[in-house]
Image 1: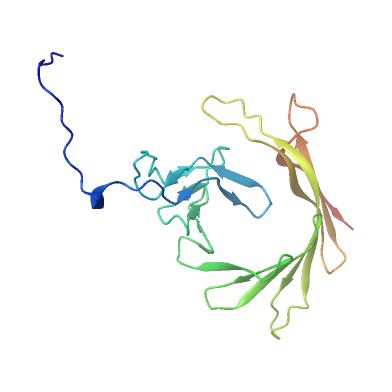
Image 2: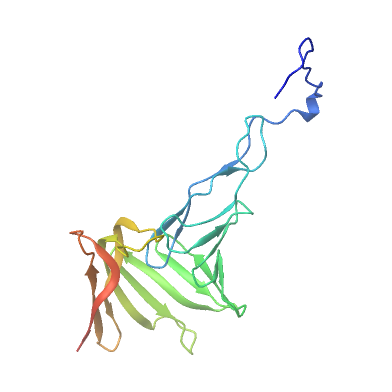
Length: 214
């Protein structure tokens, strides 16, 4: 490309009111923790407004980096929405394709309640420890004393091994998976998980066997 010589390049005068700002709110490290305790990370990193430094203001959407299929929409940065692989909308409220929703209400550090479309708290999950949870359901008398299950969890190292072109493998350590589920009628279920081929000490996350007692 040619260039004339003997001329000066002059920048237009910029009034103080039009100077881009030097800082802006920065949103990044978005994660979603599913019901099984697995953390899904999103590579979404942006500033809310353009600055003199030229920081990115988008994109504000993207899929989880682990290939799980979860999708983040952070168009509203402080109130992001996550969609499950099946298309359910997950936020403070989870909505199915028919418009019915369940809202998760964090009561305290050990209890989360779930409110349905009619405003009823139909399920309570109570964390007894890192390896044990209790599930209570609303009965016809309006009581939550009816325990539907006690779940025991154990920590696993999880690694998928699909070995398929274009499929991103998932790897994580310290993932809590349910190992036993005890019901009020005295029955219980125990779960074992499929070892990951070629990776000692890892499981794929798929159930290998389910046993019922008695």
